[in-house]
Length: 491
Image 1 (cartoon, one colour):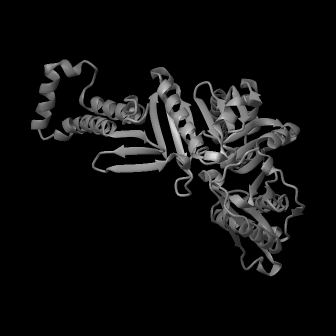
Image 2 (image 1 turned 30 degrees about the horizontal axis):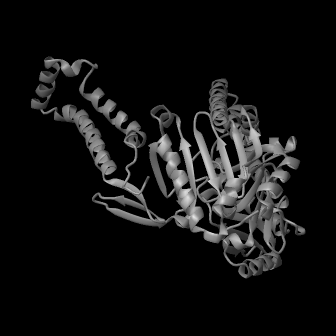
Image 3 (image 1 turned 90 degrees about the vertical axis):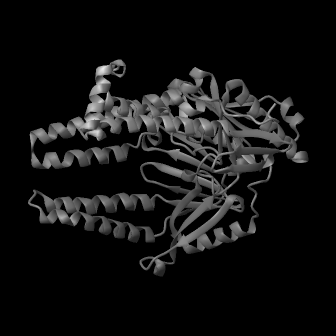
């Protein structure tokens, strides 16, 4: 069906530039005309040209320039839409743009990492859908490589055709008929109640308390009732904004369904914004277990995966499952990502972390010293609080770190209040770097950072401060494993 050049749906112009065009047109119109009907009144036009004759030409052409700019943007966008096509040629996906900044891209379909579908509210109203294509590339891992908007039925056909060709190109490594015989297995399902629980338990309680305290602390110290009221209003507005984000996030995560088959993992979710993600097991380059403070209090955690094509955009979280009990999370890991079950001995933090906590507290206190030159109450107490709070929080952060590794993978845990556990396979690590400084070099300690192929938020993994001998062993294991990012993995 896509052997001939195909354009995006024309609604792509409105979706990408609609807000900009409406803003420019409204601003330009409001500067030129006082009401909606003024454009049809000859007296208004005579007044405008009279202003132009009186050298008040900027009043006339200021608004007209904005209107003209909007028209130019619409024309350029329309021409770009007409001259941008894509098609499938054999086993290759071809993208062409015949504009002044011409572009021709020929992509072997077997190199495609993920093909995902998405429908926001506007697309559902006009009957279209978005197809997002990502490739295995470190340089573009932080963004989606190709985005197309088509009619909903054509978008589904494009997605299925690309996945079918990809499976065929993999030859003996992947037999499509074997996959079609086995139905998908439902791993987890979350209704809107489960989505709301996930959003509430994911709230950063400690950072919220810290920010609210910073807003309230100065008015309380000055004992100014007006300032206290203003600070309370500010906190109230922030809380309402946070609540609105929770409600919106709940609607977008509702009906979250995770299924698995021999082809990989299939995720569907959302009411306001429908999203569908499909990725093979071989594309999972890392697993992250998150335990925010509220979730830890009730024994819950969530699972996120590092996959090319997921997590590239705001509000696009690569969740393997929402908040579940720890025992259920371990079962999901065994069913979906058994390669990420660590078996090595756990090693605790290095004492160098205490030194780094003290050093960090001192640096932060230096930035608070200017308050000593102002005539305010409790200025020495403020500096002492900055040092004490900085030292205690960093100390708790460092002493909660741990690392574990076996012959195939490495696991690290960090965070005192909001805890995070990352699990990486040595074969997926593309770069590792150890750092030390003059404070801890004599303690034979260092900090390890590992990089994998994934979106920006999951690409870099900072492990923490540990004895350097552990990192030497990890480095040997990384070097001894070949890169398997393009291998096919079958459960």
